[in-house]
Amino acid sequence: MAGVGRGAGLRRTVRSAGGRLIRRFGILPGGVPDGLGEDEALQGTTLSARAVVFFGDPPQSMYQIRQWYTAFAALQRRVPLVVITGDSRTARLLRSETSLRVVTVAQHATLDEILTGSDVRLALYVNHSPQNFTMLSFGGLIHVSLLHGDSDKTVSVSNQHKAYDLVFVAGQAAVDRFDRNLPYFDAAARCVRVGRPQLDVLGPPRTGRPDTGRTTVLYAPTWEGANPSVAYGSLDVLGPQLAQAVVNDPHLRLLYRPHPLTGVRSSVYGRGDVEVREIIAAARASDPEAGHGVRTDGELAATFDEADVLVCDISAAATEWLPTVRPLVVTDVAAPWAAVASTPLLGVAPRLGVDDVDGVTELLRREALDDPHREERRRLVEYYLGDVTPGASLARFVTACEEAIDRHEAELARLAARRDAG
Image (cartoon, one colour):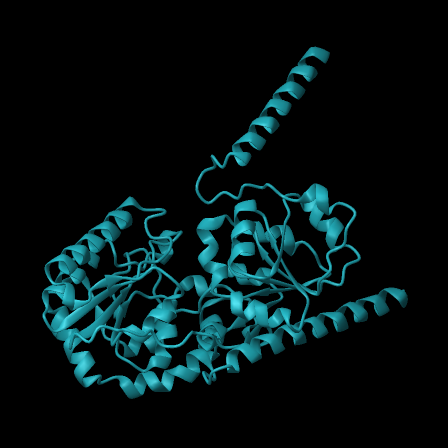
């Protein structure tokens, strides 16, 4: 039996060493954090901060946190903040792209050590990653879900929201969405309306927009989705046909903005993305003056200034486009097994199905010229996003974070008094 024990121990040692080599050389499956933390250096220390942003994911998901950079920087000026990552590659990117403090933690015991006795009271999350449960176990913090977009997707009312103490949402639309769709969730008590700080901090309008005399159509499809119930993407079923129709119309100019995760889960979406890019490349080669193009840099909302009409799927793109008060067309191609809610925005926007592609250019020109739903969309801006005055959302976000910390301090004091009272 002793020999068996030694053999098992040797196998565990080999597996552990192999795991370290796999992580060190980055030969990991897609979506898996490398787990190369600074745990040894962090031993015996306490985290000097009042707030943390927890982001345990690998670089493929960086788009989820990038849109919050400016908001986190604004919070950092009022509340000491640290970003905790679970992937060394993500940490390197964060340090190169921001001035935020970053630490990488691989072991739960290290988190326990650096948080114990610290002044950290607020934990922020930009996604529903399973990695979040590493941090969610700590009751000394108030845990707040931010996510990386507010949309009519059913993921916006995921049961996972119940894991957090508070959910920061854009506007009343999100509160109503929870009330209509998520049982056993007190939206009035758990939701805090902060708007979309990302829309506050866009840079100046792009310069040098080509004067082609054409209506610019921005096609911004979502990705294939992590689960069948959120399969709202159009790229696989009408993307190439839509792109070909638009570039063939002498009155239209096409800009294509793919989702950062396009093709990660489905090769069909990947092929659709390649085909749309090839269509645009061929159109540019045959008519360089038309100005067709692909946009992948910066945030999606930064591309809005170039467009006259947006075509998108059920996604946050539709919500964030609303303040432009320009025409919007939403695709109607969700898979039969996907859950699609009836919402005010989807009731107002013209819908584009697979069978409608033949007439899509006429639809786009008509929407750009007449825009019959303009006033209805204008009335939805505040409902979905609250006050969109520049700077208003950013201020609400910072204030909401400070109030959450104060709220939790009061709750901890209440519990301490109860314990003292026996």
